[in-house]
Image 1 (cartoon, helix red, strand yellow):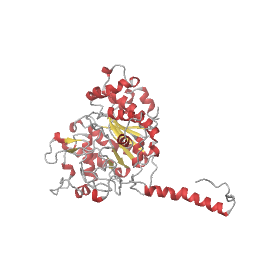
Image 2 (cartoon, rainbow, N blue to C red):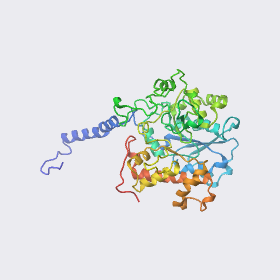
Image 3 (cartoon, rainbow, N blue to C red):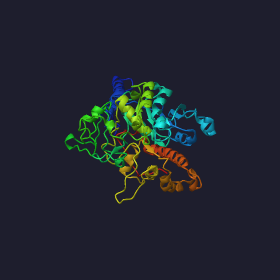
Image 4 (cartoon, one colour):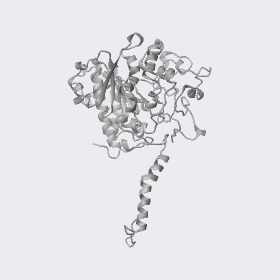
Length: 450
């Protein structure tokens, strides 16, 4: 529409002008935002929270001998308050001077807890189980809205996490993850038949969740478990929605499926509402009272605490549930149609970001990156680091030690933490992630950044 040069505009002090100004202000301030919220796909709550990094709290474990990894996480958790749960009797004077000098500027607090090595597979497992509850107790429950919980080799893409969490109510008890251990053979529960992530694992979706990828009810098909909408996600909700016959015997007890829980290395997100449900004293008593079968690993133990003490199960944020090629928490990567392995570990994720920044990532790849929540570096598995990561290090010699043979798993973890954090920043800037609604994604490779 072009302005008619012969048309007389109303004077600024005229009643018509004032009425138009008032109407414009009302539309701009009230009506337009309201229409946006109502029409926004997948918006499941009644408000947009406007989350910032200060609304988050990172909870992780650390040991004096492995402080190189918690220090490396500073690259991606900038501006996010953090509680690091150390071993009993820890001494930070044994850590690097750079680490000690940065604790205040990186908003870090420290706590300690015994390892209880008589009832866990690995050193620190039970300390990991207690870490989110210790972090809540240390930082104060009113100091945050969401807890990002993972290992010292878990990387969170904070910008994407904030976009996803804005669609949810932090006062509702939530355990958020779509990366869940579960058997692949539902008849013979052999330990070798378990995998993660497993799309058939029982879970819930957020209440009132809508997704354009779901399709009309008449066309619904479920590759895996038929996840119910439930807030919060309780075992009885899961049992009532069972389409796989998992609870056909009437025993509605998800805990009987050994090795069924969100994977700790992939990370989980807990709401403030979840942490309000039980006192720290009750949780510690429950942890120390559990039998060995529930305490084999930190993520196993914390799952049983949530089942037994909270009566809460995992909620899938939803976006990946209706898109079989997408996993929000530690996705890995599938084989290409011609059988080429793009990398199933952190090196593969790093490759995809670098491809996207050069304009070589297809729409499916972009969709995954714009909804990625976490990456598990697998720092303990130095064998694949030497197989997969060494190749990546050769492309970035300034980021790594000069001699590949001297790379220990912590040095590989340090490199990957730092490199992924840089790629997150570059990608967020290139795709304007902070302005992108969660249910949307941008696919534009016409002008790749330098």
